[in-house]
Length: 361
Ligand code: ADP
Ligand code: MG
Image 1: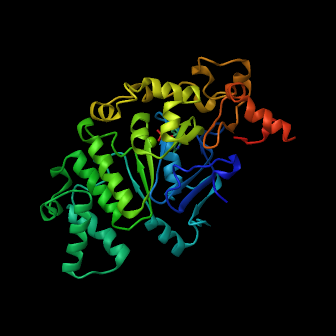
Image 2: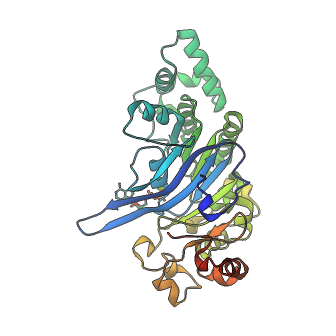
Image 3: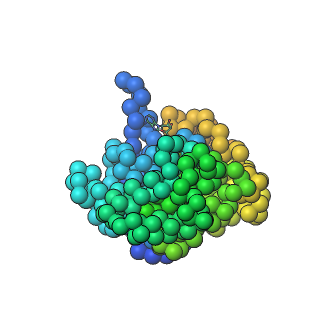
C-alpha cells in the first residue's frame, strides 16, 4: 500500500524511483502539562521515493521537525507507522533498528551545534565510516574520506580533514554534516532546514550540492523548509504543513503556481518574487513564513481559520478533511467543496457520500 492511496492521489513528480520510506498516518502528541496535550503531528502520510525530493513546508512550530524526528527514529509516534522498503520499522529489534539508523540519515538545521568542537573533520567522518564498513586500513580509510569530501565539494580534502569546526564557515560545517550522513551510504536523507541558518549567498550552492548527491546516489530526500520558494526550486512534491497537519500537497510546480489552500496562498504571496527563485534564494525572502502562527493546534474547527481571509462559520466549528482536488493534488479547506464541485458531486453520484476521496484528519 502506498501512503498516498487513501486519497487516490497519483504522484508522478515524486515517483522517480522505488518507494524507500513511508509515513502512514503518523501522529505525535506531546504532553505539556497534566491537562494539556499538543498535537505536534496529526495523521501525516506521505512517501519518499529514491531519487526524488519531497519538501515539507510550513512556518516555525508547524511540526516539520517532529515529522523528521519520527522518521529518523529519534521520537516514537503516538500512533501511525513508518515503513522502510515496505516493512514496518520496529524500534525494539536492535539489529533491524541499527540497519534502519544507517539507511535513514538526518542533517540538522544548525551546523554550529552538530559538530563537536574538540574533534577534527577527519574524526567526525571516520567514526560513521567505521561503524558502517568495519575497520579499514589507513590507506583505504583515507580514500573513503577523500571521496566523501569531494562529494560535498570540500577540497582539497586533506586540508579540510585536518581542520577543527571553529576553522570552518557555517556552509563548510553543513557540508561536513552532509558528508557524515553520506558515510553510512543512506537511501533516505532527511534534511531539516539545511540552509536556513546559512548566509543567503551560499544557500543556493548548498541546495545544488544536495541535489547532485540526490542524483548520484538516488537518495530519497525530505527537504524541510519554511521557504516555499526554495521548495519550488528544489522539490518534486510539496507538502504544506500547518499546526501539525498537511493542509495541501501536490507537485511542486503546480502547487506553487496555483495554490489551493489559503495558507499556501499566503506562503506563496509572501515570497518576494515567486518567478525568480534563484534571486529569492540568493537574497533571502519568505519572511512572513517565519513568524509562528497565532491560533494553530489549540484552535477548534480549521486550525487556520483565525488567519484565514475566507473563513466562514463552518470553519470555526468543523475541521476540513484533506480532499483530493485533482489527480495529483489534495487540500484541506471547506472552500474547495465550492471550487471543486465536480469531484465531490461525482463522489456523491457514486453513492459514496461527501466523504469519498476524503481522509478524516
Ligand atoms: P517546526 O520544526 O515546524 O518548527 P516542531 O516540530 O519543532 O516544528 O514543533 C512543533 C510543535 O511541537 C511546536 O509547538 C513545539 O513547541 C512542539 N514540540 C516539539 N518538540 C517538543 C517536545 N519535545 N515537547 C513538547 N513540545 C514539543
Ligand atoms: Mg524545525
